[in-house]
Length: 121
Image 1: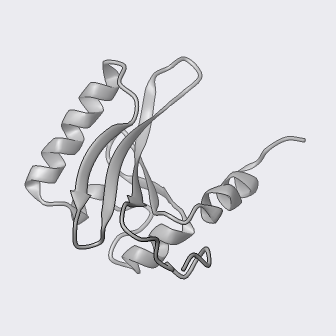
Image 2: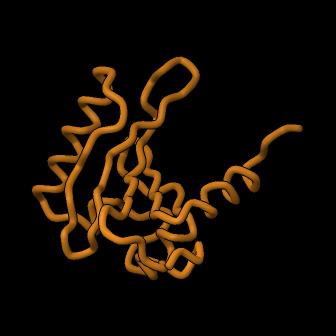
């Protein structure tokens, strides 16, 4: 069976945390269901990820991309105590190992909450 975009999208939509994939120019190319719900129109596909980050965060993202180009894989980004989340920067590579983009991955570190998507409660 050939895996197509709709299957991959469904897999990512089943993941209860936000995934926002950006290309190397920091343009959002994909958001899973949890990300659409969280950002609710504030950012979307085709927007720059820098539109929802302050200058310090933008510089960190650039540094993460440089580290990914040097071979690092998923990197811890920050803790958001208000949302009880850990945030990670995860590079995405093509078949030759070249970084083609990245995604921010969020996960709860506190008590799991119902985010309206997975039925966790």
